[in-house]
Image (tube, rainbow, N blue to C red; front, side, top):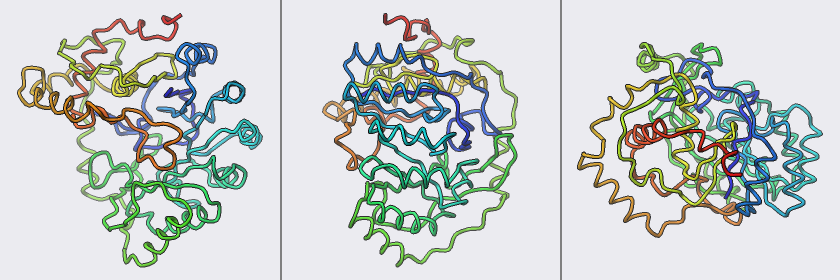
Amino acid sequence: MLYLDLTSSCQVYNPVSPQGHWEYHKFGKRNFPSGESDLENIKKVIVKENHKEIICHSFFGDPLYYSKLLDLAEYCFNKDINLMLFTYGKFRDSNLIDELKNFNVKFYIFLSGYKENNTLIYLNSSYDNIEYIFKNVDSNNLFIEYSLYDHNVEDLKKVLDDVLEKQCSIKVSNGNLLGNNFTNILDIDGKWLYDIHKFDGELNFLDNFLQGVDVLSAINNLENLEYKSKELIKSSAGYLLLRTYLYERNYKNIFDVRLEKLDYGILTDPDGDTYINYLDYIFYNRDMYEIFNNSLCDDWSGHIIDENLEYNISNTFYFKLMQKSRDVNSNRKTSMSFNDFPDHKDVVQERTKEIPHDVKLPLILSYLSNQELDDHHISKLF
């Protein structure tokens, strides 16, 4: 599978995504370099590695804002390559959607509410645009992922009603709260708006793709649910959470840091897929790709390693984790296929998920900071 992070451009701001949050950042949009992938380089990788399935999932941006998206879609259509876009569904011109439809492109749309409530987390999103995609894209090329929170339970039934009428697929999952039971929502300038909370009820259809009769069953499940949502306010607990992000940083990115060299173990081994970021750096390991993207921002520093030394290679706990990962994952499927839709549970790397993030982070940052990063640039392949 080829994963393309086509562009850093996006008109939607999601504060619980890498756009607005990482280890040392929470207040407003992060400072990452702007850019977009070179289509000719992408084509070379497609040919060299003979890819037939491509997922466009931008790390900071949205593929609908890639300037060469139609060219990519036409190329994939003519080469009989499956192309899927992961998107917030906001676009500049409806003609783009019409032409993408003609090239048999699949759409995977992120939702966090119905109508104007979708903007409570996905700030500046457009439900009118989403409805246009809903109405004009074939149902077999349309997938919805609904992020469930305490405040948007009532909206879910309305979304499911639309999905049932359209006969497309939907997956409902608990929304990202950054490892907590609640988190703060801040706008692009860092203004604290309110706190959102975890859905604290029970539903029997979470984390599975639903279609047809399964959607109807989910609607019935919701109609029998007695649940009272919390008010969206700035809470005292939310204030205490924000305080942890107020200390001084050393502002650097991965190109300006050299960290203590640690033993990276299997964390840097290829996982079977290819990942190209929007600056045309290519990786064959999802953890490495994601941490590289995050460390392009200048909101962290080298002392992150010092804070995690208890997890270095000399630690017995670390050895146990490495062994567990080898044992558990030796026969595990590491990638998905388009044939897995709508039955797969997550488009994520499974191979090393047992290893905690605070172990992966310092080790892979150490690896990256001791690499000649230009060697990971796509231009070095040809």
